[in-house]
Image 1 (cartoon, rainbow, N blue to C red):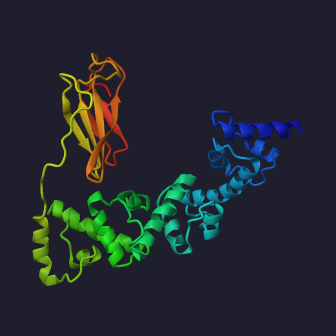
Image 2: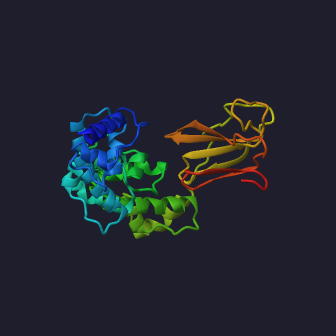
Image 3: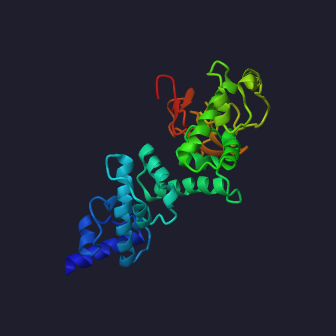
Length: 326
């Protein structure tokens, strides 16, 4: 009896406050949570943490976690069983639709998803694309919708065109949308740099344009290459300026153009110490047409002065370096 009491107390303590000891599989088994298993333990503990749940609710989550594990395992290795609609529904993803099952599984295979939150986001994104294609009174897909649904090459500037094509052609599958994304990419790449592959008639048609013929192609491509426009759109300045900060000494922009890093090589490198000058990086994110500062990265050391910086193409990594040090 005492092991059962101890196990229940461990689980209740963890669901009340996740800083307490994480339950083990043995704890769940002693507590009578029948569907707890080694294969779903991580998923189960993620759901239980800080949830203030009852044992009955945790039992339901254990059943859901078994189904989440099917999704997770297929996403990790497509030789595992292909998830069914019941797996999605029984995992607690009640918004899953039978008509979108092939697309859900396509992205589980293409991406590597492992948490309930990631599965929920995927289902919601694909559903948003589907419902907007059939009825434009539904919310329009955003840039994040397309990215979450697996279209990681789309650009913010293409979203309106994609949504127009989505509605005009009633694109109901991700494979249908692939065609438009690829067509737009070819047009965009050529407009930015005419050394890229010139668009074909099919590229224009794939991008959602109609009445494009071979007789118009040369003129369209010539016009497309001249269609670039330049203009002043944003002015950036330090939110914590000091004389001699050298704000703007170096900059880096993510590939999608939505994340900007600005090096101030003599800005304070230690928080709340205006006299310290080892350097900082100011990070800005664009949402729509607006930019906002999202972080100031400081080394929090006083020895080596920053001299340069770099950003990964997807904007997930920013590196600040000092001469002979990194």
